[in-house]
Image 1 (tube, rainbow, N blue to C red):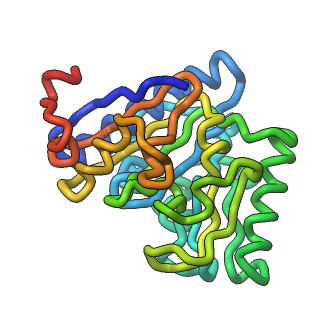
Image 2: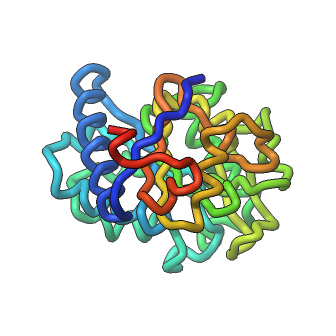
Length: 249
C-alpha cells in the first residue's frame, strides 16, 4: 500500500475546488488510457461541494464513467439524508451520464431491510468486478472527527471485516443508525484513495490518517490506495500535524 500524502489548502472551498480539478483530470486520463473510470463518491459538506465544481471544470465523456458510493444511509429514497440524492442535485442531474452507469445503494423504500440492501449492492459490485474485491479507479472518502470513513466506525465489528465487500450497519453512532458500507478491503483495493477533511474538529483524524495505529481505534489510519493515497485538507484540519500549505506544495 502507498504512504499517504498530505495536501493542505486555505479553506473548505479551496479543498473542494482542488479535489474537483484533480478528479476531472484523473477521470479524463483514465478514459483516455483505460477506456473507462469507476469513481466512488462520498457525502458530507466538502464531498458534495466538490461535485458542484466538477460540473464547471473540463469536459468528460460521462458515458465512460461509472459512479458508486462508499456508504449510504438506509432511509427512504426521497430522504434528504441520502448521499445519492445530494449527489444527484450537485452533479448527476447536471451531466449527460447514462442511468445504467449510476449505481446507488438500495433505500428502505426499495428493499425490506438493511441486510437486503447490502446484499444487493454486493451483487451489483460482483457483476462489474467479479467475485474478488472491486477495483475502483478513484475512491473519495470523507473523514469523521472520530476517524470513521464510509460507515466504518471505531470499535464496531465492521471495521475488522475482511471477507465481505459490503456490510450492513445497524448501530451507527451517527444517525441514522442503519447504513450500508463498503469494507476496508473494498476501499483498499482501489487504485487511488482520496480523503477530504475540513475544520478544526477533524484535526485528530487527519493526524491518525498519517500514523500507523489499529484500524479499530481510527479506521482512517487503515485506508490506503494501491497506487496513491492523498489527504486533501484545509488549514484547520491540518493543525494537529504542524504543517503549512507551503510545506505541501
